[in-house]
Length: 179
Image (tube, rainbow, N blue to C red; front, side, top):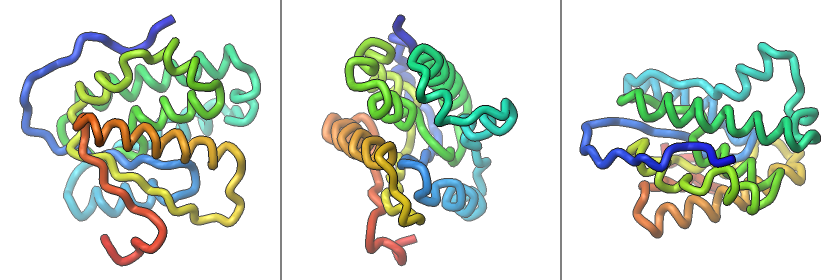
């Protein structure tokens, strides 16, 4: 089953859409809240985290059941795509790219090609002003999922940047004083 939309809006709109991208535990939520205050923009929360808290289901449990995980990621993809296309001014704690990267890390690249074949065009259609990559973990307990997600994110962001789909701002080790 294919998720997302192949209908890409080519309209030019004045927007300010900043999304934070990165594996878990890199300070995206904290940075989103600070950027939102500084830029006087609403902060869109990480909907995956909120949904898990409300449902009292562990992400690790979902990730072990392949059909359930596919449904979970497809639902997140559609929700983020719709919300980020609709809203014109925001700082987002996560982006559409995060969903695609987690799908690749857990299910493999074949799942991305099957589920989200138009993900790059969907990212373009959102019209992000910038994706801010947060790549420095705040915990010494970096697990295998973190490593796989980080690798997928970096590769995807480099591709998006090279294809001029979106501007990427890279915050990494040693960038503590740059904001």
